[in-house]
Figure 1: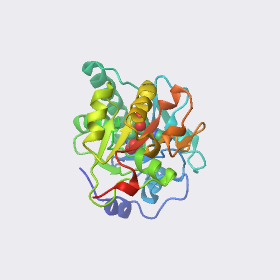
Figure 2: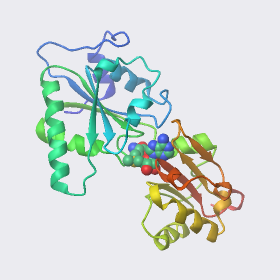
Figure 3: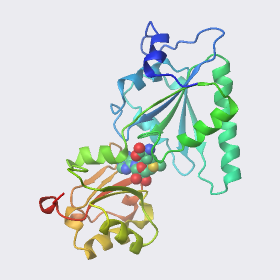
Length: 268
Ligand SMILES: C[S@@+](CC[C@H](N)C(=O)[O-])C[C@H]1O[C@@H](n2cnc3c(N)ncnc32)[C@H](O)[C@@H]1O
């Protein structure tokens, strides 16, 4: 069952003080999907902060390869007791069966908490509905506990955060924007750039060196920007990648903003 934010918080009154929870005896808890960051802790809608404070348990995904959960870093400075946090290693196993089993087990954990009457939050980086494992968790929870009270709060996408940090307007007038996980070959990316005014390039990773080479070859590197690890230690903000001389690993947790024509030459 989905509710509007208004309904959820109407039911939550009076608002608990920071760090307090609001479990109602005998009633199942509510599930909150919340996007944090990317980067600074303050990048969180007020309504989502309220839900975070209300939650008895907060699940934080952590990539198996990462030492620390990025979502946890995005909470730094917020008055959320560490005792509520429960880190879960997330899987990006290409085997669908393995993925299904992983998310089904996670959904059962969440359902157990909800049935015990606890409100539960699940954190993602940026917007929960944009390239996020949240979609898998949501589907598994709906299957495991049909009728669960679920509320998803929109978050700040990494490309909105990048555009703001770089002072780089994303789309103006009738410009066509493509949001794209980086393809594996330069020819596809070239075609995507040639057919759009702006390309937001995500999931670049190890492909950064050839992406930079392609932009230079197309003569557009000067009007393209790179934002890496926004708001996190090691942040890189580069307004013009023709000046970029950082190491290749900068491509991880990075977003590029690519313009086919310089802004002053745009005609749509
Ligand atoms: C799994 S997706 C998550 C997208 C996220 N849900 C959003 O709303 O943008 C991971 C990609 O998001 C981008 N990203 C996430 N955090 C970032 C950050 N702090 N700085 C720059 N890009 C980031 C990168 O393109 C990364 O490859």
